[in-house]
Length: 387
Picture 1 (cartoon, helix red, strand yellow):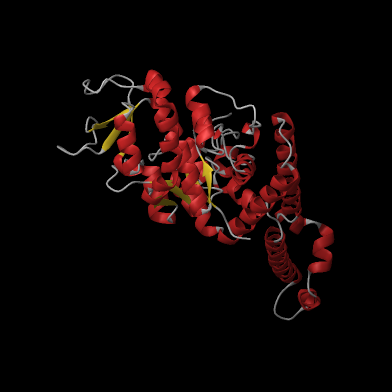
Picture 2: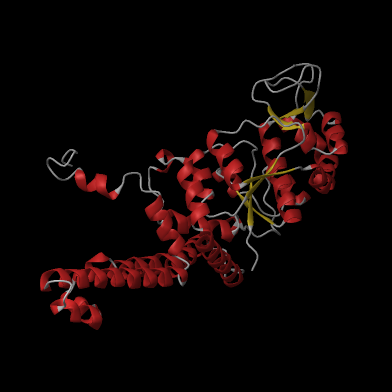
């Protein structure tokens, strides 16, 4: 089963650093719509994820803009007067308050001309990103921009087989089925009697399942975790990540099939939460218990030592080259080493068999304070304060 790639929308520049770090823990890659000559202003986090993991992938939107052009041309032709009353602009005003902008490359030429002719948009260079003397932007009412970007993002996702994902809750609630009727409904506040609401299933389930699974182990102070830790996790645990990602994809496919006719949001939320618990949360707790059972404490049990000391080492107790105490200690040392190797092998086998092993790695790898430091904070005179 192919891994899925997320598609960030409706913006180009990421708005939520914590969301981006979380997304990097469950998406193999994250595409975003970047028109030619768009002035990207990435944060250090976004730049590091791109440079180190090739995580952020730009997608040029011109062909997809052509794909949604007929939808918007139909809506403008049918409802130009109604739209103008709601969203029309005084063209003579150079930069009216509240205007939002689409980049020139995001809108097909015939749609731009139709918007200009209907007084729904104006060509603009009035942004801080504009090049002198170049109309790089289409100024419109924010509601028009929002609907257009959601429709364009859905078309890009369809053409690229991407999964739409966003840090903007309002966009998640409006990411399904942008045909002419749906666009008109959204812009004119209409509710079609023939269209059954499907908001509960908006946002692909692969995104929902992945986010919920990762949040089981992501620390609340993720914004304080250096992005380098996330890069290191992804590099060191590639196989575990792949196993985890396959399980996310499989869970989303099963949920999509079984919830195809379910429209109650509460029911969908419950089913998704139950499936995440069954596939990830409970196996993670079982893996934690199993790993603790193979910890170093087992090496010091008398029963383990009694049966683990090799016969050849036990026979050395009265040997010529070592006294009983030394040789016994040597035997115990070799026995402990053997137990450590056995436990390590069993731990590796456990991790290899569990889709939740990656979550365990995330849990350990993103701890903002080491175990030693946490313990020291609780011991007087150990170099730390008492918690």
